[in-house]
Image 1 (cartoon, rainbow, N blue to C red):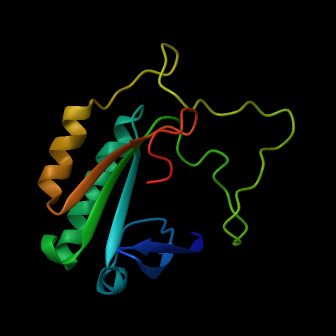
Image 2 (spheres, rainbow, N blue to C red; image 1 turned 90 degrees about the vertical axis):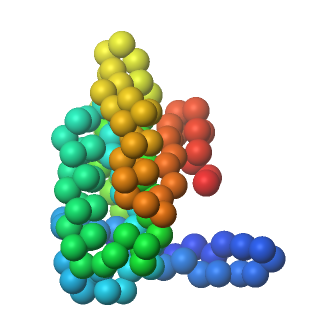
Image 3 (cartoon, helix red, strand yellow; image 1 turned 30 degrees about the vertical axis):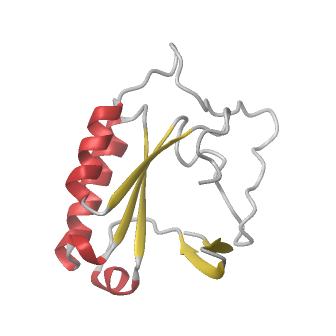
Length: 143
């Protein structure tokens, strides 16, 4: 996983976000220091949605639902493709002659997870915000 820093302004006050990209299931150590968790899944992939549900259940076994702020993010486009970093927070470019991954829902890349299912999961998670993103259209990219 990667590590990232970003300074944000909230109510006129500067805050430094320390972000860690974790691969795999949360453990007790992770759960003890995390103040917030962003669960990301692909709107075109049922198994990624099911995995988010399982990861949330694991996290909940370590911390109560009200102790950690959560965000659920449904992305349009394949997860993980070209989203590689070398630790500086800047993404790398795809290898030459490689097709770009699809980044929007289309007839050849259909939506599998409907908004109502994602909203219901977010409601079950408690203290959770839900966003859909699409880099192609800039939908919720800077939120």
